Amino acid sequence: MPDKSPLAEQKIAAYDADSVAMSPTQIDAAIKDLDDWILSDIDGISCLTRSYSFRNFSAAMDFAMQLGNAADAADHHPRLVIEWGRVDVYWWTHRVGGLFINDFIMAARSDGLYGGADKPA
Image (cartoon, rainbow, N blue to C red; front, side, top):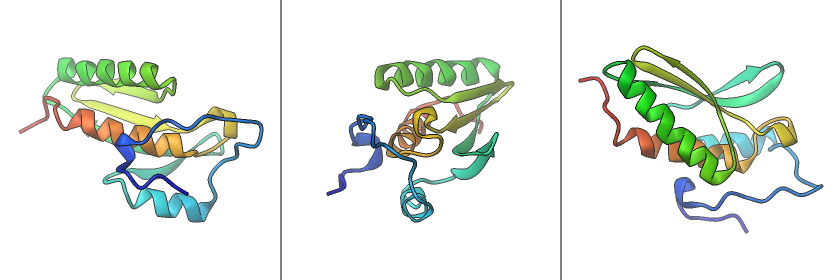
C-alpha cells in the first residue's frame, strides 16, 4: 500500500533489481501533489523540473547548498543550474532511467526548503 503521508515526509524508497521507472499513469497521479513542477526531458529521460527565484545570487547559492545537503542526506541528487537570482532543479533517477517515487519526494522537500528561502519581494 502506498504511503499516504505528505510527499516531503515520506521515506526515500530502496531500490532493488525489480525497480522500474514509474508509468505515465503513476506520474500523472504523483505530480498532482506538487505545485509548479513540470515534466521535461533530458536526453530522452523524463524528469521533474522547477525554477526557483531569489533576491540575488547569494540567496540562490544558499538555497542550492541547502538542497545539496538534503540530497546528500537522502543519497539522491538533482541536477542544479544556478544563476543570478535563480536555481533550476531537475529530479530523475538514473538507476531506473526515468522517474521514481524518490524524485517526487525530493521535489516536495525542495519546495519545503524554498519556503524558508530569501525570495524576491
